[in-house]
Length: 400
Ligand SMILES: [Fe+2]
Image (cartoon, rainbow, N blue to C red; front, top):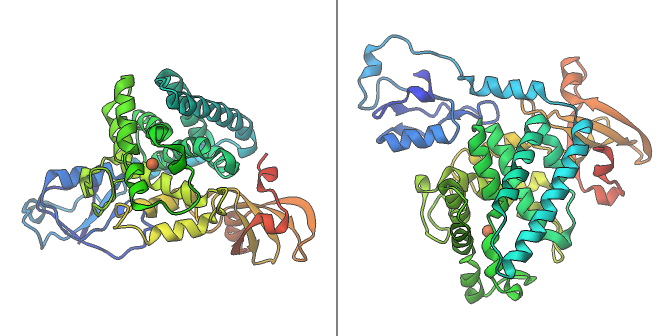
């Protein structure tokens, strides 16, 4: 068995599942079997995988058996990632800028969704400007924009949702190592993914409860409507159009509108799908409470290989952290804290701010880096994730 860079894969090589944890090896492709087409290899590379274990003794590819040992290193991929982690600027510093960008984007979402209902075309140039500033903020410190997606108000769901999906998709895309032009397309596809809902009757759109079969059929036309509206507008690239059209397609082919499956679903659509479901699950609506992020992530984990492509939920979790910024947690010290910084390298040990004593009394906020504490010999663990509202805590107050 040899570990090679994904870029060195050839048709006929036999991929081995080494059984390694995706938490430790998020960029290792592990779906066992012989590679039968170059499209399959393209899909692995597009999926952001950096390395693969192959068995030279199996598969029809002969080259491996003759060649000397192949390079046994991780690509620049993960290295460049940790590089961006290091360059992060302070969360508090980024928060002010991120709030402004989020507020501007939200205003834009209100305008284009209301405008689309009245038959106006979207202002694509403005969306591109906003996406650019979202990407800049995410590159500086993704925790700022990502934490803002948790602070929405439920009466504005349709607007906040389109911005949240764009933000989450861009942050995820950055962590997958996608180049900037892909992030731009991802941001635009995120903002406009539900544009087609402007053509769905409000009675169906805002129905608080389960849709009837007929209503669901109407609802299922929104990705195509959105695609058509963007085609009509004329500025969106094919990547963006596909991202919008396919955002409800599933890996197993049971999605809509095309019922396409597997690699026929574009990379952008796969990413948007993960961000979309995560935001929908964790959002507070008039008729339902938002699911706690860690619960949403574990539910989504059970949907991998069905709704989502193998590896995507896993890497989304890695990207968000098990405890996303803004989560309210109880520590092994029995104190209560707000998660104020993610740590991709050690997702179980984020940065937190202690806000309540073991007796649930307020205390002066105390910053604590769980990873640094652990490295210093004092292991403090997160025991459970709690709903801050039950403790009259507003996590946002500790992120400023
Ligand atoms: Fe949708």
